[in-house]
Length: 552
Ligand SMILES: [Fe+2]
Ligand SMILES: [Fe+2]
Image (tube, rainbow, N blue to C red):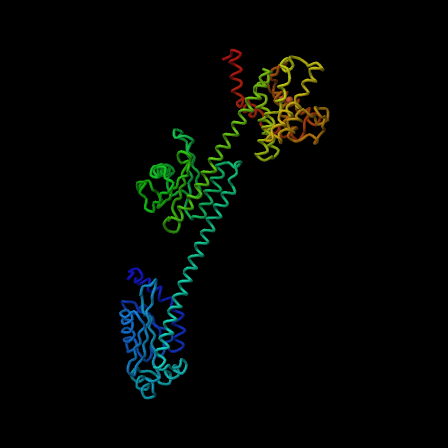
């Protein structure tokens, strides 16, 4: 027999399943009790004793016969009927759980054959009972005959079977509902995470808000830690993202992450420690248990995901499965994000080199395109544009003068004023820039800003002579950035003037040449700090320039 099913607590649970059946049978004068191999399971007295309890007494013929009947049920493993002379009728049926005999259900009743008037008086006198009260009780519940015993035994067998089946079904339903709720939470977390895996999303924000915080809520743990490794094994730098409250010191956490990674050693499974062995006791703090799963990578894991201290009990395989699903998603996001960042850096790098080579045609505008790009992005951010939009404005700023590739160096580098013919050539460059970029579908949205960066608010600009808000915001932004850089950088016809002069000139041009709203935004910045930032951003050009001029 299954030992576990015989434990007192299991039998007590079983007994509780028969509570409502016991009540219903008692109303019909039938006393139901459940017996285990060691005796009666529940010895609680009924609130309102029936005829059996009153007439049989606590240890009288009912209890004795019930015990013997139960033992016979365990031996014979089949229904048993016992009819005592002038006493109770006792019926017993086996109770099976998962095909194992675990208990005997016993019903006892006093048949009317044993309760003639004289016999009832004798029993009442023997037990010290009030005859009238017992008669009223028997009238209420009714009396059954000895002849009904076989039918009642069959009925008891069916009722026991139905009761057990009902409870199995209820337990299954409860378990299924629980599993369904858990699965729903897990699925909705995985779905939510996959919905936020945008390449424009910053990895730190994704790891913190979507992944770690989401897992923290669903798993019900003290904290979730994501460790993202550097790109190559030699690259020591690891990034830690922590959600929740750490139950141990950060240095101990780092040790734990290293040891867990060593133990996982490239496996794609997970490490579960419900008893901590990976850290010595003095380093554990309040850490009681943890799970670690790797974030997969191409040649080696890209990171590690840790869950620390579960609120309700131990970590199990379901927790590990969910963490692995999330870790896999994180790995996909991180890999894609790195590829995207590499590709973006490559494109920007190529464009930067291209524009720098055009700037180099005019030795005095070295780094101009990159500075205009940076100023334009800053102005876009100050206008409240999204980070994506601001990046596109940066790109437009970087490419705004690409059309100067068609302007001879003799005009670009000419000291002093240009002749009318030379200026006419110079006026072509925004259109040439737009023509070059028009062939690149991915740059469609930067063309308008590039084409209109020499338009003026009063309509006296070129190439189209647009006015005011006819000029796209990007064009107005690049126009101001272009002007600000020209006034604050070394030019062929003057050295970089004082910042005060540049501010005065820009303010003077607000409304006629430049958009006054943008001028206000620019002049509200800390321009001294901003100019230092711009110089640092083009420090590589200045170094090359200095070397070429023999300056150290
Ligand atoms: Fe230009
Ligand atoms: Fe320019």
